[in-house]
Length: 450
Image (cartoon, rainbow, N blue to C red):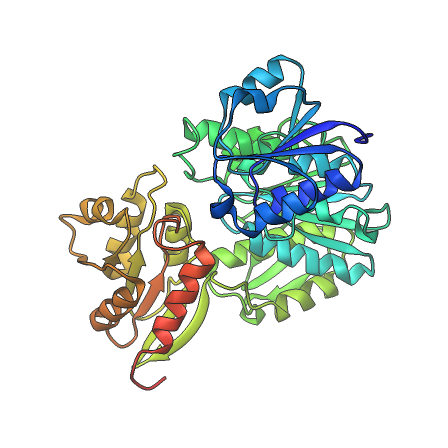
């Protein structure tokens, strides 16, 4: 794909948008940047893009900015725009950063998507593949934009590119082909963006597009309804459940297609949902040729990513766990279920920006396992209505620091205070990571003996 002299627009100037600007400029394209935010709001992203020589069109999406273009690259999270539809009608190609990157990558791609667990599984598979003594790129939605793999040894034929992909990133792929495509789960999420759950699931299913007979579509064995999403993909292989190729049997992770046998007691990951994630990662890595002993070694060493079921401390017999990455109801429910078997009950801290789904599954699970819920943020009234009439004690807080104090006062010895917000963070925080950091600092300042 020759980009020299082409007129290209990048819509949405964040981490991946700036990486695309740099990539296009390096290849001789004339680049125009468009973002609804102004330069002050974009900060260093705007100044860095301008320093690269990009033409800046900020503060809105004027129609004339979309004229004379050969290519438009849309960043994740940019909603459908009438200007984009008009450009496509004129024959302008509109792609995602992932799609553009894939056209310049020779290495096999391992792609992971799902509502929950993507980052953990992506990191695990990436670390396992590194045991093959091949250059490996790990990124995508996880952190480093996929387009930054281009030009590295990992993007060459001898490398491996392992990427986490969100539904937003998958919306505009057409030629990207994943040798191993992993779909972990699909539960309601981003219904403030998609018109229906079916539309959201369909976006996820784009991960299987372009797969051929010698590629693999990895799916959960206990969700047969998801298999129809991969019917046009590669060979379907299953993980977990009672008939997955990698599953739990007699207290150990076993692989019917390989030599893996690892007692679950040797996993450092917390939560039953992370056992499923371990099964998915082990299967994905084995399909890439990683040996069982290397898979087991990584699983023994890996203790999780920050803000994902991260144990912080125990104060006066109460455990504190940060799962700020649980940004939807399904993830929050999985967090609670992951603590099943503990002696005490759960005091949940939840709230933030509502994403359009029902809180009923969260209410049902907390009635079984919970003691109290502390709510905060824009979704606090919705959560209060969801828990109304239940025996769960309910408190509202105006800050994370106050939420931790209230949760601590409600918890009893043996209980767990769990931050699993079931909402996005952007009402009070810049990201789920900042939300988790504030929670952790508040927990560190609690009195009592650890």
